[in-house]
Length: 420
DNA sequence: TCTGGGGTCCTAGGACCC
DNA sequence: TCTGGGGTCCTAGGACCC
Image (cartoon, rainbow, N blue to C red):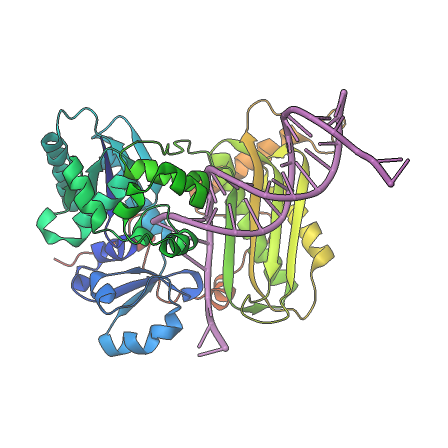
């Protein structure tokens, strides 16, 4: 038996923790560059505003209905997420976090469904009380069915945030009311194929043969079919080590200044390298990219893949490689709208094969990197780095972050003040 | 004018091996 | 003119997730 714990309207709920005045107000959180709506309060969902719509398309509606909007604040959401995961960990030996706002927990220690539901209710109450974020829990034998149960828990007040699918009767009832395109693992393409084949509900799909599922949707579809029929077969990657690490941003305006682009990219290099070192890995490849707006014709792109002679986690090495590559391919008078770096070919940092004839002093590099990391961890983010940073004034021109809330829970300067 | 960011897994097809 | 059979590995691109 598993339970899925899913936070309701997560980013919006995080903002409301520190802004209780917004509890019954329509609120949205926007993606980077204040581009798209990525989280909506229930009030906003009821207005018919869809996930992912560009904000400019609903700006008028936002004014009309008094919708409050926030730029995204991942420092805050990440911190609240890890606090929630800590609580969840107390209730299980096996926690599988699958995104910033949801995690599966193994409840096989519960003797029956009633016991599992009681645990789920306790979890919900504890997270509500100590963090202030509402969550929903779905209990079932497979992860795909947990998703369905969680949806019911979220959307019908009668469940009080906890729903279980444990009997065959419950399974059939739940799936018969569940649209096929809402099933976890069925995306737009698969849904279109299924509709064409006359399948509109999850139950209709589950009642077809496995061969039907695998012929139409290959292995992933067959796995979804099995899960809907109660066979647990989707293992969640529980390894926290990432196979790729990305940092990319869309800029508020096209960037034509090479120095500014280099500064932005060097910050991205520092970020991904930090992440890489935190998971104690090294990488052998890095991709650097920059392109003009994908909505304009005559799109200009730079995609460069760099290979390191030996796997590395060193910020300086990555930054230098990035600069060399960019200077070769950068075009003047081109408004680069988006840029980023991706680390690839990631492997554990231990036992890296060294080069016999190396032009870098790796030990010295590592010492320097450690010293810099130590200073930065004591004095704040990137006090020392390898390039001049984008200064505050430039940063506000580079990125739209006007409506960003403070990092209430992670920065001492942003801590909340109470007037008693 | 304005349209995000960070991931994973699967598959087909090409390159290569003997 | 005729041109096998059986593999593995890598990569790009598609589909999906939140």
